[in-house]
Image 1 (cartoon, rainbow, N blue to C red):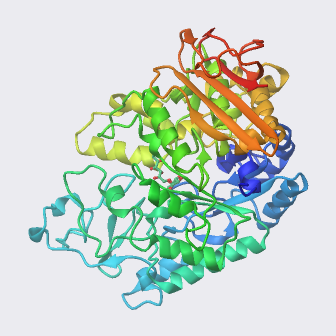
Image 2: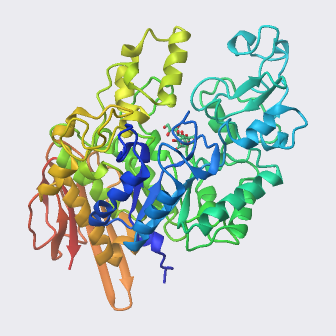
Length: 582
Ligand code: TEU
């Protein structure tokens, strides 16, 4: 009796346009390049595209610093090309959702240009302007901040930017400071100002009028700032996150957005940064209106934090029981009310096979195992471009190869502060965690620039494109690509994959993740059993007594196996099986 929704049944494919396909030889992907690959997307069987920002932007943060919400970035193309892309997708039954970045704009946006001009500018209150403080009255040191020589001030509070360094920048034009939770070229919008909300909602309507099917909402749980912008506890390393997530007005703002702009047939997915989120808060975000905020689903970060240490430069090993605990909490927590998103990587995260699988000897097997997980948990799967090939992290060797502001800023600051000597000190963590691992060009073939561009790619192509590329994957019926295709079609064939209940069977096991999905319909009882060996060694699987001996067949698997019943068995390294209990 669950409400059917297209966005529950869909597989979403995320495109990072800068790195997808370049048609004009400038080394940067473009919209015509995506149009060229629409048939590729259709063949893969995906139902919806999430396009990372394609709006006008000076690209301090690759399009997450928007200077005009209603124009397409020159490097990417034109509005009429965007319309052509939308139509090409829709003609094939593929929907399109756009990135909505409204926690901040670029400092080059007309609103900010106006806002910074004088303290009584029209749009002064579109952003967070505050006077600086006397360093004597704080724990802060004026030398740590970038101000003119005659200005002995420290910022309004001690918050740090997500990308390192202070979250405030002093502005000469009026002698005040503005808030930016990200780069200094990304000033935060003041959502307390009704005019800001009106402008944002109008802009969203404008895009909906252009026929899009929903929004991915960037850091949407940061838009409401804590009252009085208080100092954070200086002992706490994640100052800004602690202070700024899920602020006091967040549900008012989202409720207003729901009532004025959104409807339940749109796919709306809110990116919710931060540490563990109370399940009550999560439910409020995804419960339909009027009781909840009415988002379709959210991206939480809990599984992305498992290998993060307390220090930026610390790399921690993740453990399977912890990963299961996180996912189980969400599978169960949003089981009956609400809906989950499912992702293991995106443009901000390392490649999933390098992080959660084995990108060496068992690359193919583990990429398929992770794909099995992604497509058989309860929720909407998000495939990030290249994941369907089993693309891996990049072997960075110097800072020159790194483009990302979130990697470059902290390294520069740490070198400046004498915390590290140079790139070699952080090479391992950059290779393991930098966002650039995901941003290297899509590997279409084995040629010099992987078929991505005829020019010089804006960021290096992973040298393993000689083995890992679309052409090779499509030619090989046993490839990761074909496996993804089987999974997307399985979702269309079997309701249990979308709507079935999730029950975990081996929460504490060190290397096995076993669960069932069950759907009870009128006169039907459909059960799948998923068995995943997260290990490069063999592992014995002992089925629980209540299903041992039941008749079953294999629905999909990454090794060649046939069965008649569910029995005790030895699983191969990274073996994944989905049993259909008949
Ligand atoms: O990301 C939010 C965010 O907090 C991440 O950048 C985070 O720092 C990263 O995942 C480290 O693990 C969103 C966008 O996805 C990202 O690309 C933008 O840079 C950021 O917001 C600012 O708009």
